[in-house]
Amino acid sequence: MHARVLIIGSGPAGYTASIYAARAGLETVLLMGHMAGGQLMLTHEVENYPGFTKISGIDLMENFQKQAESVGVALKYESAVKVDFSNRPFKVETDMGAQWTADSVIIATGSEAKWLEIPSEEKYKGHGVSVCATCDGFFYKGKNVAVIGGGSSAVYEALFLSQIAQSVTLIHRRDTLRAEKKLQSQVLSNPKIQIRWDSEVVEFQGDERLKSIVIVNKKTKVESILPVDGVFVAIGHHPKTELFQGQIDIEASGYIKTNKKTLETSVPGVFACGDVQEEIFRQAIIAAGTGCVAALSAERFLMNNK
Image (cartoon, rainbow, N blue to C red):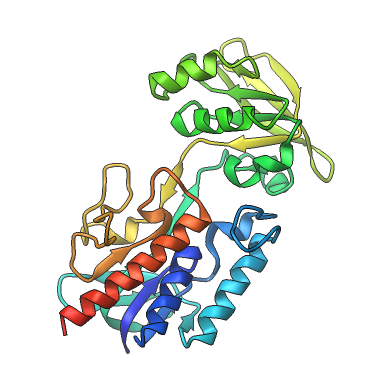
């Protein structure tokens, strides 16, 4: 089976790319995977996406999907398991055994937040435990929150939350922060931010919503309970790029290397958009915008490479 444009991934970036590609008159196929919608499917409420005062992540992604269907995008509940970008047309194999060729490919597989992976964590995802302060911080205005991590992402989250919350506790498993020095000085001098050094969260507690966390000091082995209204896990993200190793250039951090103007990868005709190539600002509106850029770039590429 052949498509003019084949898109791998169905978050805001993938859906937007498919809408723009289809509206350009290009036969467009979207490999949605078996959990369409990406990270937004785990977001309880979205209040910072233009056009919606408040909408659930699930409803927002359903709107994306309906719009893609309305413009003629072929939606496939399949995941790519093998790609070959060595020659055009490019080749993509799915987990359902489908063999696709495509004149252009857009990668929108996104990234996954790293979680602590302790048993009680799953219960409170979306009910007091989050991985995005920019997305969910507003819900904790004037409340007590904690941030887990010690890198730049965690420090950014703590500083951002300090403008909203009553207090912020930064919990780090080491005795020094890994963030850049300027950020460290800002955190250390912020009166609203307290740091628990050499500490790990071992349990989340509450009823329907999170009420407190259990912290263990790694050196003294002493346990303590910290009452909190919300916790933000900021121990990093993992871009979904394993499938493309050896096919295109990938940064040491794991993110796909792109031309930031066109979002073309090291292989002409293959583009990447959304969180799979965005290391810093992982926001739905940015992902959607890069999906638009990738689709328009693919259209121009196909016009120039008939």
